[in-house]
Image (cartoon, rainbow, N blue to C red; front, top):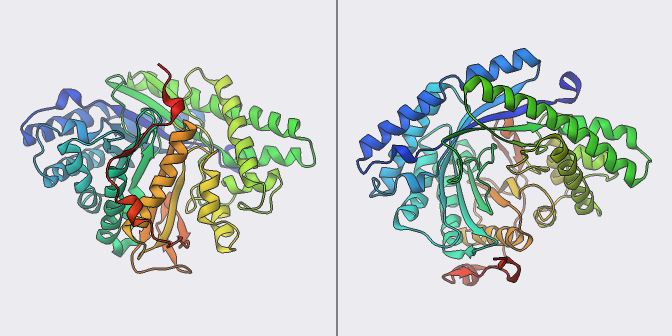
Length: 442
């Protein structure tokens, strides 16, 4: 499974609470954050490498998530530039311990924004353009509170400015920025990871991935009925999750940090044979986007979860199938062939693990249009009581037919066309969309 099917532990993520770092003096706060991260995470990379050698299982990424900085910087940060100081502190600390990414430059604003949280949102373009490994996320909606449309409108502008500030690198700053509805507190995957306010002082969360393993297993189910197909996916998901459980427990033991959750999401990479799209093809579709795609993805997602929860008592995070365009060669090919559209991807997000992920769009797309797309995706999450997210990349200077290059696990992406019908009057309404009737469960 490891050598031929691309089975790996995608990430060991150390969650760190920064509440005990809070100080009204920005310099003291920055020093406290740096010292806590570098102390607790000093052995994270070393432990990940040791586990990989011990079990023969690749541990691809070692990452850190921290308490949302919108909360931590509230008393010390008086300007957006002050928040950027904290972003640079996170960047410096992450580099000092050698991790791939650090998440938590975040704000939770599903019902409203404080002045400090508004400043953090304003600071995101500067922060992401002036750091290398910092990731940012903003939760703008939930089933319990509705959708904060003021934040949605603001995030359209933030994404545009982030794209402009990083245009020399195909607007890669936007690849480190996620907008959420119903964001989970224990997600180990970037760019959306943050350490939730209900978590312990530190925690180990593991994300394990195996699209290639599922695809290979389904080769034995060709021509078989749906019962056999579903049983095959469940059994395979069980095996994959047990690997994550093993690694998570070992990492917890070696670091002396409590074990949190295993996220059993099928997270693809640009490598051939490590693709969710290939799973959909093995189920019986010509390519993603074909009629039946949403049904096939719903089946896959459900069976992965059913198999995973039998393998671990602590399944969490996002857990399901990711459908990022740039990180899945099968998705890329379907887009290039004109068989997978933004609208079809949106329909698929109603049943998949997250949402519109790593999608490159024309650089001249308006901020209002981006906000409208975000609002649509947030509505899917709110109504369906699930996590949804948007990671759009308006690539400045490029249009439909061009290609954006991000490199590494982020891959490359064809620029997808966007419906340009005007939604500005809708987006510019102030306030929030109320929570749905089924949110009242007290």
